[in-house]
Image (tube, rainbow, N blue to C red; front, side, top):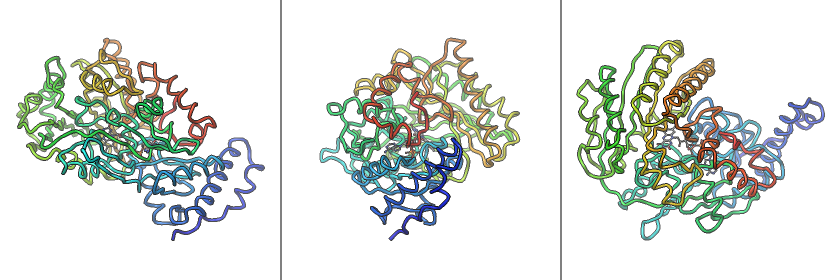
Length: 508
Ligand SMILES: Cc1cc2nc3c(=O)[nH]c(=O)nc-3n(C[C@H](O)[C@H](O)[C@H](O)COP(=O)(O)OP(=O)(O)OC[C@H]3O[C@@H](n4cnc5c(N)ncnc54)[C@H](O)[C@@H]3O)c2cc1C
């Protein structure tokens, strides 16, 4: 039995009437949070956890980045959609701030946790059920992708989810989803055939192509503005063995690596092979200048050394890692599910910028991020900074449209392009501003320089975006925002999600 939620303090009881305006709001939020926690505690004594419990400590530390650790008033661990609906009734009544967390991998402070409110952790919603014909798998949002892959692979199936096994099902599918099979089936979200969700008014609905079709569209990229998804029904892909490769070269191979990347992206290159997926990355540790070029490769067929990656295979410089082979398709996500990637003891941050797949743009990134980070960020303790060139192919966007489309609404005529991810890891809070400002300026500079050459692309991938970026504005070249806002208002007449729920990015 969990401890009951602690009684309201005297300070909170008097706060609203005695403090100034900003403080009034904070105090009202605190009071709302305290009231919601108390009411949930009496309805669900074993599912509501206050700050003096081990489960609270564990759940409030789910965020992957230390920059995202906040202090919720309590943590609620629903066991099913009915529990979530009950929590929504309490939250609406008490006007308590709240957050929703799946596995906590969005490194944006305030996206999935909250101060002075209820953190709804979907951690226990780990339902997994393959249909009899194996074509669809039902997934609870508390699953991580590794759990999903380990569940479906023995049946000869795959799902187009995250490439790193420890990432959460909930956030990834609601923000898009770059997977190993995206050139065949689009974003991860494009494989969702039905959502079970709790709406802001506490009703539980199924959204699919024919019922709540507006929500069905909005949830494919709309993040957490539309409801709390308690089940994703996802199309599977028949899949057995695949090719995988992980290679890290020293800086001596920078030029051949850049050439290999450019050849991969060029017309007729590997990026046009829909079975190929690649994560080409440059990584730098500014304090010692160590610079590495990396290629993680996946081919959705049991083909050794596929032609698609031939230019990377041909690089003959010294390697720090060189593994490849054919085996069960889950080998790569499992290998990427290492303690190093899963560690939550660092400060982490993403920033995204897109541009056309062109050698001049690749060169701009290399100079803008890495030449400058060497000097500007040399002092930042334990900093490593990487840039991933994530190719979005024309086939990918066509597949997304063929599956009914999504709120991101990309134009196949603007493809191929690169959805770039700048990722930083460091240790001290004192360096937060320096790393954030550097990344923001670098992303802006890349956007401006590529645009000046006619190589710009406006898309901001929500799942890779950073503080202050506005991905929703970039959807459909600006054409999706009004529709998303109208759908949001239709289902959230009282502004419960708009005003009380923690979000990563403004729907503006
Ligand atoms: C190591 C690492 C590897 C990654 N690899 C990939 C990759 O291969 N492909 C890719 O596309 N992205 C990748 N990402 C980015 C990832 O998709 C996002 O960070 C994503 O938001 C993480 O989902 P989560 O459930 O773990 O995060 P959370 O932080 O728990 O959630 C993210 C947001 O979604 C909301 N949310 C989550 N679940 C629900 C729900 N059920 N209902 C309503 N709202 C919900 C939360 O409130 C929050 O605002 C990676 C990130 C990391 C850190």
